[in-house]
Length: 234
Image 1 (tube, rainbow, N blue to C red):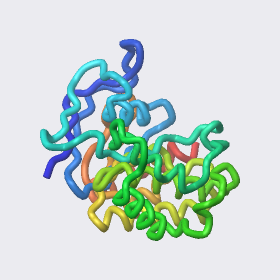
Image 2: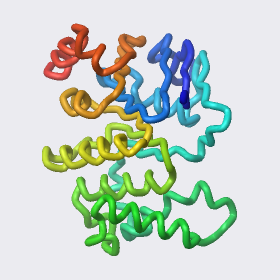
Image 3: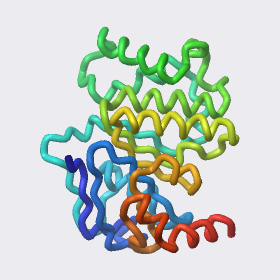
Image 4: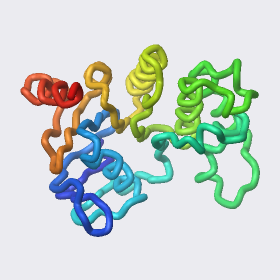
């Protein structure tokens, strides 16, 4: 089932386009990885899809019955967020806030779901610790848990492995692959082409305009994969 479609989308800021003529769709169960050079508009595209940034032209169309509040979003982490003074459990539970309306407390179902996610992600040992005292890899796992509390089926991740070491990166991508195999629809920005090719179902390649959109297999068969590897190395 189609969840999202972008048609002739131009994105940017203050009426100045960064990237133009973007056309693609996301279906239930897809893992769409967005790649491109720095400044090509990857994060701006995600923010436009989420309604955090206004498009210059074109359309972002969600399936009529889809609730945009049911999107788990993991943005790039700032230095301020890394030093956030809260416990791990408090950070994770805050993923439910957008669904709570004026209700001041988390209900039993939300607490149970949070506990299930904590168990799934292996966070039990440090759920009572201060978030600011965790390693980078542990913090990203906590933020993933928070995003999962916000959604049942749709994750949006903006360069989620930035600043992590090789071991933490592998563990994170393994989690993403597992979630996608369980039916989670995922849109993710990444610079790590090898990890992307292991977990993606579809690739979106931006460079001033839409360079490529299609299946991972089509991308591998094209010469674009070699072009991107060369760009990443320079």
